[in-house]
Each structure stands twice: as C-alpha cells, then as structure tokens.
Length: 160
Image (cartoon, rainbow, N blue to C red; front, side, top):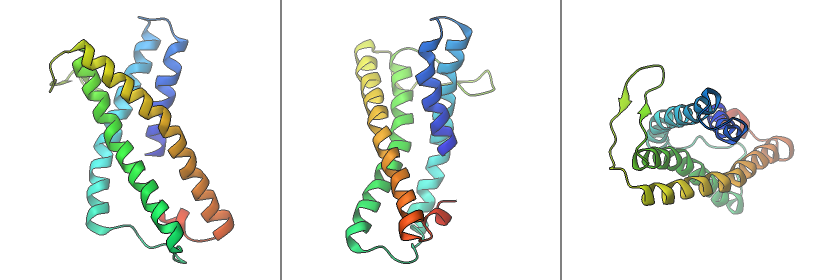
C-alpha cells in the first residue's frame, strides 16, 4: 500500500513538469488514476479482514493514553485509503473523463453524470484531502519510529 500511495503522489505531483497534452503528462495522470484504482482494490479486502479479525496486539501493550490516538490514526489511514480513490473516480466521472482499466481497453462505466461544477468541487476536496494526508502519513511514520526506536515493541513486525 505504501508503494502504491507513494506512486500516486509522485505521479500527480510531477504532472506539472510536463506540457499539457503531452504523452508524459497523460501517463502521469493515468498512472495516478491507475494506482488509485489499485489502492481501492486492495483496501477493500484489507478493511474486511481488519473488521473480521481485528488488529494484532502490540507487545508490550500500549498504555491507554497511547491506544486511542493509535486507533484514531489507523482510522484516518483507512478512511484516506478508501475515500481518496472514490473521490478521484467521482471527480473523473463528473468531469466527463473516461477511466480506463489498467492494461486493457476497458473503460469503467461512469456512475455519475458529467457536472463541471461538481467536478471542480470534488477535485478541490480530493486535492485538499491529499495535502492534509501528508500530515497523517508523517504522523504514521513518526509513530512507527517511536515504537521501533524508543518503545522497542513489535509494531513494525506487525505492519508486514
């Protein structure tokens, strides 16, 4: 998931390096779409497993004052991994764009009618959440380092 999210960010952040209408820019945008679709395809079973099995325990157990922020951060991560790709699809559909299934000639059927005003609002929301999520990712990395270097617990082993 980390690699897919990193590629999605890299693709969309570098699209501005290429001229509008160029093949490189189109590939960057399509790469962003495709990695977003892959994130969505992978997060759904991951959420299902998490709901079914729960999270593995941390050894040694977290104190209560650390447990609730950890749960909140994980909820934010899962919400982002689910909401961002859905917002991306909604933005593309309301903007009248076709979303190709990667490595095929198939097009995902649009589930929303074109609506330029709604597309603009959805794109703004998608971009704002994407920017805010840099902070959530940073907190997640900082927490992982804290667990590994200071607490010396098994959190990183659990993240495999």
